[in-house]
Length: 466
Image (cartoon, rainbow, N blue to C red; front, side, top):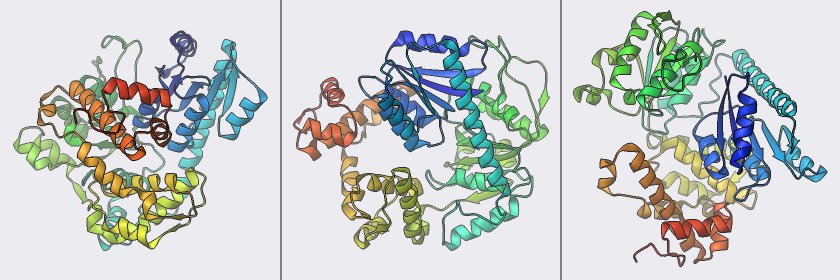
């Protein structure tokens, strides 16, 4: 089932497109009339195709295309426009659009273009899978390290990958748990099968159960047809369960049966099915504490903890910082079409002195930001904006009452506080110049004005109430 994201500021157009694409097609369709929320959605979960309008007030289709390609250059993007010109077509295709469609369009045109784009994406995935399968089994190039600690982990991966042993990967956020899981799968006897990843903290329990085991038509409101779960999709391959410590206790019981007997039932089914899976799980928690607090089943823990791989934080492998920095420099210079080949000694010294609470992921984000701001062919200390990152922390929410709220309310309040802190820091940096702040943030000046008004931010750059 392909996942399609449609963006158009006209709700009627979104409804029309969703109806056209849904008829006779087994696709998961997500629609947004706000391109900014669409991009947040795109960053949060995978899609196979993006269809976007060209003329939108907050962010136009070309900007959406650029954002999508910066995040994942392999995702096909189709642009719709009622203002079709040769220049529009040339610009959109030059920047990586798969195709463009003129409004008003015929139903057949949108369907044919969509299917061609999805076929192209499937072919790209298949070619990548084949290249991975043919790679030298000794090649661990994705794990960038000179650290003896990490070399020991690579040796452990070589040992356990060809077996059927269940693996539990532990480590703080940003240490590379999914990277290790992919390495295990890639060097396993199941490398020709799929590795399917499921984040156990991403969805509420009632949706997580369907996502994990699938469901039958009519099993619940909105279940209009049968749907596969990740267990069935990963059959003959590997199932990677990230953040396993967040799994609901009832689902822990069902997962235990799957681990023990290879059996499961889709939601709403009375028929037991079987699956042949290699299990890999990951957590940033101490599961023994979760067991004592009765949040995690002890028998499930021992089923998962057959082979354990503990990943060190970046501070424990600080010798890897230069190696990783140059790896990320090459990656984001390529993505952003820049020719930055060097990191200055001052910048490297700052990177090595920085305290990485977010581990390798934080280092990657810092280098990406540095590449974006760098205007020369060498990354300088000021490009990294490390002082701004540290200074920004004073604005982040520390309200203990926030964590007493229900999840959705807390998330919304946290979002508001983040927007307020981010915009305040932007305005302080620009000396209250809204146009400059909007340009730095990459958003429209009118949109920033509206946020300032809605959030009660002092456009002189001071926090509200001071």
